[in-house]
Length: 286
Ligand code: SAM
Image (tube, rainbow, N blue to C red; front, side, top):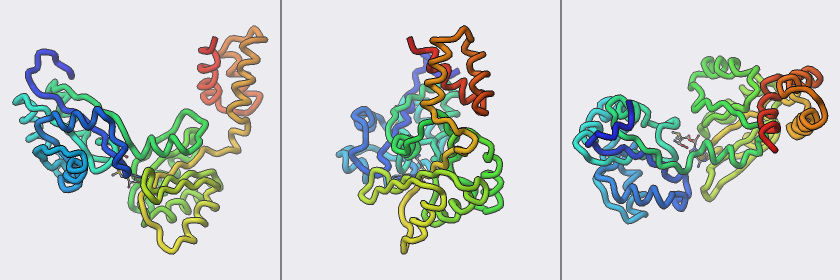
C-alpha cells in the first residue's frame, strides 16, 4: 500500500516543468526543486539549464526511457535511505508520454510516498485553447511510427464519441492528418504548435483546411498537439441545445432523468451516453 505513515523514507515529488516558456513554473515546483536532496532528470543537461535559470544548484541523476528500470532501483535506494527526490522530465509533466511511471509504481510497491507537483503539460495546454465543448477526450500519446500500425490505431477509434488527442512530430504531422482524413473523412481538427513559445500557433478548421496550411509552409517546424473532433454528423444537435432540452424536461415534465435521456437520445438520434453526461450536469444544478 502507498503512503505508509511509519515509513522513514524520503518522498518522491513528481514535478511538472515548463513546456516552453520558462515563466510557466509554479511557486511550489521552485520551492520543492530547491528543497529536495536529489533531482532525477530525463536529460540532466536540459534540467541543468532550467535549474540555473532558477538559481538552484542540486545533485542530478539521469533517468531516461531506455534505462527506467535500472535507474529506478538506484533512486528507490536513495528514497529508502530517507532522501527526498524530485522527478522531472525535459518538459511538462513526467509520466505523460515521458519516463516516470515505472519509478512511481515501484514507489507505490515499496510504500514510498509520492506527491504530485502539478503544472504545465502540452496535453492540458492544448485542450484549454482548442474550444472543445465536449467534456470527454481520448489521449493517445504518440501514434505508432509505422504507417500500418498508425492506420490500425486510427481505425480502432472511428466510432468514438470523444475527441482524439495525440502528440505529433513536425516530420510526420502532415502525413498523419492525411491519414486521419482517409480514415475519418472530413472532420474538425485543432493543432497547437509550439505552445507557450515565441512561434506559438493555433490552427483550427477541417482536416483539409489545416492540412493545406501546413503543406504550404516551406518547412514544418516545432512541437505539435493534434485534436481531432468527433464526427459532427452523428451529433447534429449543439451541446447547448441538448442542455436546454434537458432543462425543459426536468422543469416541465414528469419524466425521470433516465427517461428524459432515453427520449432525447431517441428523438435526436444521439448516443445515450452523450445525453446522459449532460443530464448529470443539468440535474445537479438547483
Ligand atoms: N510530458 C510532456 C507533457 O506533459 O507535455 C510531453 C512529453 S512528449 C515526449 C513531447 C511531445 O509533447 C512533443 O513531441 C509534442 O508533441 C508535445 N509538446 C511538448 N511541448 C509542446 C509545446 N510547447 N507545444 C506543442 N506540443 C508540445
